[in-house]
Amino acid sequence: MYKSISYWSFLPVNGAPCPPDQAIKLAKAAGYDAVELCIDLGGGVNPETTQAQCEDWRAVADKVGMRLDSCASGMSWGCSPTHLDKEVRKKFIGLQKAAVQRTAWLGAKTLLHVPGAVIIPWDPEYKPVPYDKAVQWAREAIDEVGSYAASLNIELAVENVWNGMFYSPLELASFVDSFKNPFLGVYFDIGNIVNHQQWVPHWIEILGKRIKRVHVKDFKLSVGTLEGFCELLDGDVPWKETMAALRAIGYDRTMTAEMIPPNADTLVRTSKALDTILAM
Image 1 (cartoon, rainbow, N blue to C red):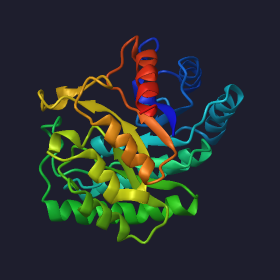
Image 2: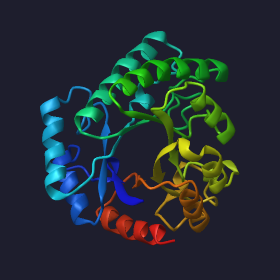
Image 3: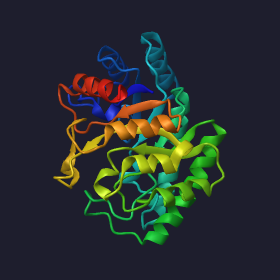
Image 4: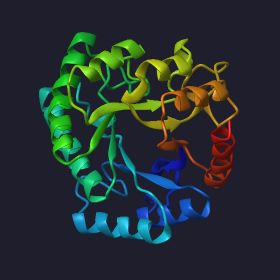
């Protein structure tokens, strides 16, 4: 396993998203092995980013010895694949296919996929979606985007997240398996499990080899809301048991810290915390 940091953990530069080439160099200086670039509307990498630009950023990473093994996409929150409006769902598929293509151009192997939402806790404008419809529409999106990803040899990794869906590892495992797509898996977010009265290592044991990537976050149960996400090692994640479970399934890929919102000390402080966690 090796240390990675999410692009969303970098402060803006002059009021704009941190340029990806600058993020790569900052991460290298802070002791990381990899950066997870994020593809978002208006982001440093977006659905309009050219192949030449992606390849330039890849060359920067190669030159300084940094890995760009995975990408994330947050476009599901603003354009949900499970939205009640069919046109929004259709638009999402186009955007996510563009994200898959840019993941390939960056030379990465895996794209995080938020499958949609029944409810978005921080967005009161998002109207609740019936669970059965949400699963149906999530399936339709993944079937199309996942097939496209497979054609480019890109893994599409479904994230467990606060979206009102797939709060059981058994359900998530069954959902992923049902596609019969070897490039489809799970992007396992450690911190997202803690507030659901469940034990992180059990999820790892059940999901097993389906886990393509891991997000590293911590959470304070005493808070219990979105404000409960906290600095690594300050929360209630059972880190020793979690690391043992990951090693037991043979996981040996990126451990990507996702620290939102960042501050001036985030990169260095998180790098040190990851060192401690990886040594457990």
